[in-house]
Length: 186
Length: 199
Image 1 (cartoon, rainbow over the protein chains, first blue to last red):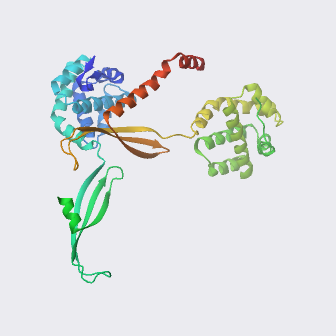
Image 2 (tube, rainbow over the protein chains, first blue to last red; image 1 turned 90 degrees about the vertical axis):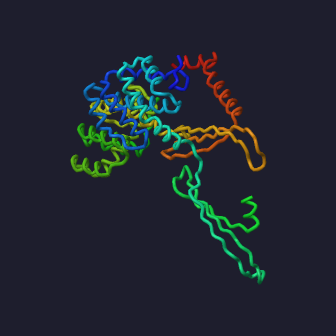
Image 3 (cartoon, chains in turn green, purple; image 1 turned 135 degrees about the vertical axis):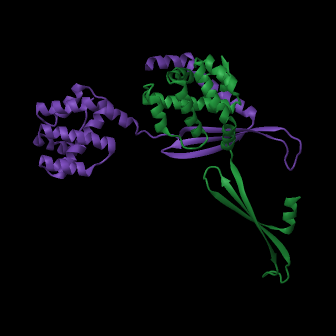
């Protein structure tokens, strides 16, 4: 069976298996755990101790806690990736066996943060390099050892690139004569 | 298959009968720690003081035991072969029994440590992809040219490298088809026969 939040593909087996673990936690606590997982997906720090406290009532082992965080992370980021609205996500999760209150609570948290999640995913998309800033300077050469009267302008450009792999700025300097610069601008 | 011990190793292990049964247990524990974590000179010094022998003797004894354990675990030799191999050292029966017990108890763990020492190729860590469509360039306006950009993150000896690749969708489909054919080889009779025999 195909699900929209899985990109119109079958739901992965491990997600199906962990839905029953999610059902063990109360729906109120699940909404709070969702909020923590959303914080992690948005790049802020996740408070793992709070999640441990919330899951202690359901008597989950440490492996189950990590599985819960993983499956919630998958559901929320995958739904944002495929631009699924809250209601469709809720009905699809109920089809997978998640109880109604749990699904509704999860989807309400998802709807609140859907656009910020999508903005964050857009920013994380593959990007090879990014232009940080451009610095320029125009010099005027008066004379040189070759020719006494040169009187030519010279443009210096420096592109600051943010390289994706080695996070840090790389400077690419270049010098252009006036004609070359005009060709570049044309 | 019998283990062949060189003269030097026989001399190293020669200190064991003098040290006594409890000492052999202690040295065996040190030998396992050496395999798990690497050399621990302080532990050897502490053991030497406790057993009232020189630090060198303890060190040689531990190294000899380590060699004995790794070689016997590597070759997975049977109990009878192990006993025959150490018989040549001329130890008492009790000491032989202790060494055999040390080998059998720790065989699995030593094999798993040895298994991690094989050279590794770079392994898959993460794959990021992006689908772009080129609409125009300086030389030609009004085009439609799709391209898939892939960044392959690889792990080798705790080093992370990234490889950037770019291809058009038809080459990517061909690649996928070739990889699926490679996976499909597992289902042929030839591969099935070998996998069945390996189990």
